[in-house]
Length: 230
Image (cartoon, rainbow, N blue to C red; front, side):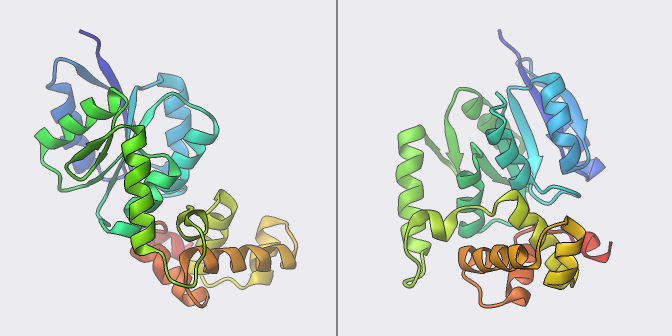
């Protein structure tokens, strides 16, 4: 029997311990490594080459969606299951657009999580209790985007493309109350470049101003409250 190796990235020790114990009790699964922050995720995945990675959306440093996008960009072989306390339709769409294979609430039953892990390790995608192949997921995404898309927005990618790493970085600074000029100085880019990114962020999130963008990021767990006090 081939063993499914996993990496867990979550900053809550009790949750991580519970998940580890559930997984390691299975004869076909083994936790290879654990991380606490988004910044630790990629090095751990590269070192241990897990078949499946369980990643919390709301992490210190890079959030889970950012980590997922980076995994896809670097063509790492792991399959991502995102875990979150923020279970809503828009967040699910962002998660799968980023490249996740499953999106699960953190109150998921142990048996269901094990089933999800086995399904994604076989190349399937899991949305709630539905299992899809690649074509089925794309069809589900198309219907989901269409149902959520605002009338004035044009195109699936515009409405529900997850923010780029730079846009997410800028949004994190916005939640800390920094001005465009201050963000430009922090990142070593021009004031106009920050303004251009902010325009794209507001459009993608379909919000009217910086405050609404910050609230959106906090509500979806993309930015942690403690991060805003740094």
